[in-house]
Length: 355
Image 1 (cartoon, one colour):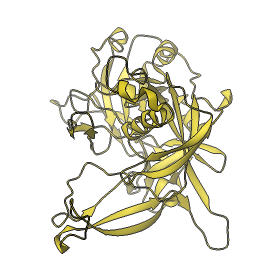
Image 2 (cartoon, one colour; image 1 turned 180 degrees about the vertical axis):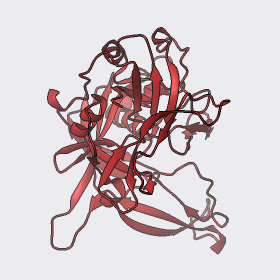
Image 3 (cartoon, helix red, strand yellow; image 1 turned 180 degrees about the horizontal axis):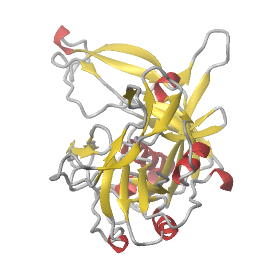
Image 4 (tube, rainbow, N blue to C red; image 1 turned 30 degrees about the vertical axis):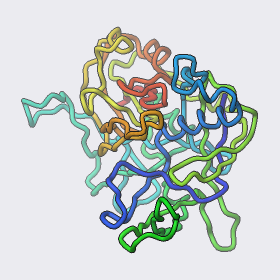
């Protein structure tokens, strides 16, 4: 099933930074929400529609235990977008165009694990594009190793309207206002671009999942504040599916559509049952800063294990003797995350390198 998620109100998605009223009183958030947030909301939506099955939650007979998220995309004005690959950068003077780094032999540090480096092909000063997104059709060109000089991008933050909120804690017994030390601040967001004199443009989430039956449309709560969103069944045309069209490339790119949690930190487990057959050798990486992935276990009434995750858009350059089309056929849309892959972490797509 594929659904489109549209916010009906402001939203808030807590990141992994510490937060306590009166101490670190400003809670920071993020958008898009981590896959685990969407995963939990889908399960909640199912049980809300099947309340008689709620007693089976988190048991061996849990009807949602096979739920699996396959893909997360953005929809802006009828156009699909995906996180920008992190080996695409921009010139400091240009906020619209990105261009690829070049893969070069690493002749500087003999002890480095990486055989190659990603280098700036221009003489201009460059910057990373942390919250950049590109059109799905441009991702196709990127993965197909089509020779290109630039790819246009936009930023998620351009489609976010911030609405700060100040709150104060209440006493548990009488629900009266607590002391001033329990004042807190959160930055609510509305995923919509508002320009004076023109129609607001929203940024919606497209979620592809399986093994869970939901009505064709409905509402459920999403995020830390329990705000309401509307969802409806959505159809992605075959022409808009992420594909791969080249062969005989010995240098392969592994592009992450969603964050991934690896046992070895930043590095995928190339000895896993899914990846071992390809004999991957790591050449270079472009992965960005790690993010904190946690959560709260409602059944055990305690926080879940906190993980350091590789952010979405991260790219791994690897070599393999296996035909790249065969690799793509087996890996595209699969999770290579060592943990919580069913929740949508580590969704990978295969590309080639045309250097």
